[in-house]
Image 1 (cartoon, rainbow, N blue to C red):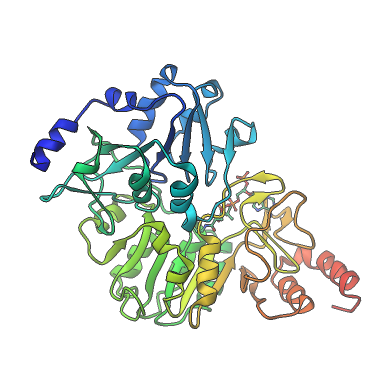
Image 2 (image 1 turned 30 degrees about the vertical axis):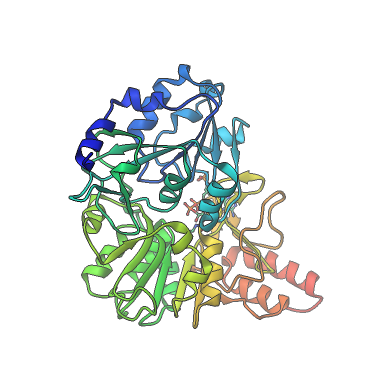
Length: 432
Ligand code: COA
């Protein structure tokens, strides 16, 4: 049978596609902006059919209807990274959180979770019958490799991304054609504080560096401050629209990368249609599975790798809390520690934790003497290096506890410095 005939034989309605999910199944779903929202909506509409279906994914950008209280009997979410629409279900005990490095999610699926179903969102097949995983290759490709059945929403709006980003029609089990617009993430508003953080981070970036940037206003503010640099490269878990401007201005060229020269290497994308159009059929962007992109040993092959991530709290020893506010889990480790470790092993690598000096409208300091009760440390004091706020840069690696504390107090918000200094003098039995 030709792949075209095979494709036709697997076409079905949305209702039929989700009828292949069975009670008790474990379903792994493509995440972030690549989420197959139409399949998820159909699954939730048919909730009465199922009991105890486990839904596994990282960040949800859609409504996550399966997390609603009335869905408890039908679905249970196993979250690998919490988002706005899934947080409440975990807090209320109707779902679970699994702490896992993003780089290890494929291994988690292979060795421990053994999913029954992979729910995916793909581009239409090319002339050879290959569909692209589009904007979310990360753990979707590994999930497709190990799931018992593969159900795909094929969407003309999904870009055909290059790299290790393809699955042949013959490997799909059930196909639904549905051309909805992809989920978009609009560029954030950048405040004066974030602009200052961006400038301070940019002071640590040199011509020819390869960058990893997280998501949100701080990474975008960093990008704004890089307009006088030359020949930057990208090896990053994700990118958003902010990167495009620097590509168009000829600042991101990937020319001086020590591996994958000439190419931005990424595992997922979150942005607007402009970004999705840019990556379509574009060999300058290599989309690879997350156990390649986020593998610290691969990251480390990039000389001059600068990783920039954000966090919730840093204590005076340099312990970094990035995913909890006290006992409350708000996100996950994502690729933070993967990149911190990779950057630490990279020749001339640098790792930066960038954050505003205060939270909650200036009411609390993010630099604290003790981290909040119940909070988990994400990046340890052994791995941390630069911490950046709007007030400057603190360099912590290979420095004593006393030196670290002094450097961190130096970049804390001035309103909180007196109390931090008081604690410093008590703890270190010496004048600040
Ligand atoms: N004390 C009390 N509350 C705090 C706080 C602190 N020190 N720091 C943050 N918060 C609260 C904020 O007020 C906000 O609350 P709200 O949602 O009720 O408004 C919430 O925590 C989120 O903070 P915010 O600053 O808006 O988060 P963000 O969107 O800038 O994300 C992280 C910051 C740290 C949560 C996010 O970067 C993350 O999850 N990092 C870990 C994963 C990672 O680094 N991945 C790698 C790259 S993708």
